[in-house]
Image 1: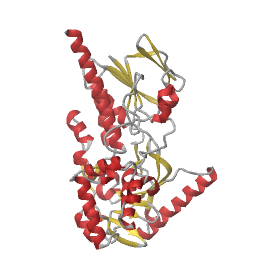
Image 2: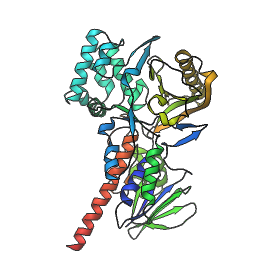
Image 3: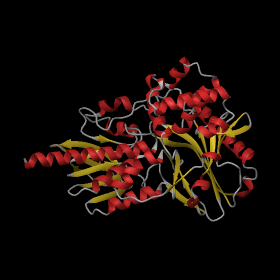
Image 4: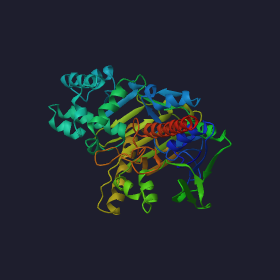
Length: 442
């Protein structure tokens, strides 16, 4: 069997790693960019390792990466963010973030009665009896809840920080999705970890795994431009090659791009419901310092302006040269603008808000900056998981392809959905192949 995988991001590499590990399967992974990894792209500058977005993993001990580590013989290490060094800033006051029972009792964002209320809500989520799962959206639940405004704001803020969306859009996330996500996270003993060495630690090993099989090809800078079907075979046409024949095709790219590629094919109408899905975009502000600016926290979330700063190097020492420090600021972005001028002004205001946060909590940062990078619209998920969007299933009726990526159905959010959907698609193909072989021998 010959398989084509279109897209060399986390999901495409995951699917290819599993399939290339199975004898009798040949394949080609097509990636239009010069490098692999997609949005999990890592590069070095002046001794600092920069990522397009955070390389944090949520619920590490319950994460798909653990399955991949065991099944693909991957080896990587991670380190947990110190919850005692995570703070919220509200109305100019710093207070412990209510991430566990100890911090909930210490935090100043809730009153004593609100703390007991919130602990009860966490317990209900963990035991899967919370009513949130029965509501279409978080907003619907909060509108009917008798909780205080502070508890409601905390729910919005938690969902914002884990789904990387604005509080307004947090209210549009499915109650079932939130309940499932936080049940997994609250049960985790490692709620927030960083992969030591950044995403490249994982992507390089996946690439190495694929490259071990001589029957697999990795084709970078070669986008697939069209696809047709003849005699139950798929013919792929790229910028440099014509009529490449495959038995199966996996699309591991943003669903909006898949819909565009297939729009003039017999399968285009089936992708119509997904083509206008909106993506999750954030402003990313990275600064690398020549020395460590010691602060009594490693993560600060500004609840008023809806942005946060992580001291990445406090958890992952590999991302800085000796004696250096790397901070990453993230601002959640709206995507509803009248015109480009309004969008430009909005992004500029967010940049200034981020710099003001640096000024307030990391005084002297400007004088010690060695590396600075501002990505004003970094896509961290191809589909924003809100009720007005629809995640693409791994298979569609009457469509002969497989689909995976962070815009597809799968376990978890953000990067985990890319890993889990890529893994599932590969396992489904392998199971189907084994079944066909068994029938041929019977």
